Structures are given as structure tokens and as C-alpha cells.
Length: 164
Ligand SMILES: [Zn+2]
Image (cartoon, rainbow, N blue to C red; front, side, top):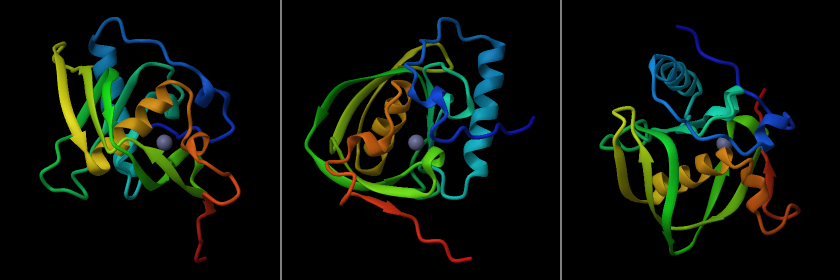
């Protein structure tokens, strides 16, 4: 199995609204395995969405286990945020826009439902970084990038420092 290459801004696929997954079959599972492998190849990566590897389908992975040992990997198929509560400003980054970080306004807590690889419906109330990451990845499925959610492109977007 090989990992997939990351599409970067301004690739037009990052602006598309992705289509729902109608059937979870062997090819869906094989694609998800490759998506997970691609996420793990990125140092510090906590989430990835299918359009970031050029596949316009409503699939995303969230895995905070590198930061929070108790966190479980979420394979989100056709995810929907049922409810968002509270507010949090968080400094985000993205593999598809890797030269920048930005202060992004998000819900503090979200209640999300999705279809699992087991073809069952799942629901979860998430908060903290997990809630932020879920919102960031679901945005990708709707063609929205984190820099779209900043209050000011002048004061809330930062170029990453590089030490070469
Ligand atoms: Zn992203």
C-alpha cells in the first residue's frame, strides 16, 4: 500500500462540495486505509479529508492519539454536525496550505453523527482540539478552507517560520 499525494491550495478540488458515500465496499475500505497512511506520514498530522488527496467524497479521518493517548481514531463517512455550542479561537494549520497558520473561530463543542466503516450510524459529543479538528475536516468536505473563517486576513493569518 502506498500513501497518496497531498493537494495544495489553489487546487480547485479543495473548493468542491464533496459527494456522499453511497456504498461502503472493498474499494472504500482500501481508499480509507491509504488515507490513514497518508495522514500518518505527515508529522504532527491530526486530520485529513478525502479532497486533500484528490477524491471528492465525504470521508475524513480525525486522530488525536499522538497528542492525547486516550483519543480514538475517527473514520468519518458522511459526517454531519448536528449541534455546535460555545466559541473558541484556535490557531490552526492545514496540510493543503502548509505555509500558513491562522486564528480561526470555531465552536467549542460539537455533536457530530457519521456513518462508520461498520455501516452503522455513530454519534459523538466532542470538545477541545477534537471538536476543532472535526469542524476543520468537515469544512474540507464543503470546499471551505480554514483561512475562509478568519475575521481578518491581515491580522489573523500568519506565515509559518522556517528554520532552514
Ligand atoms: Zn485542512
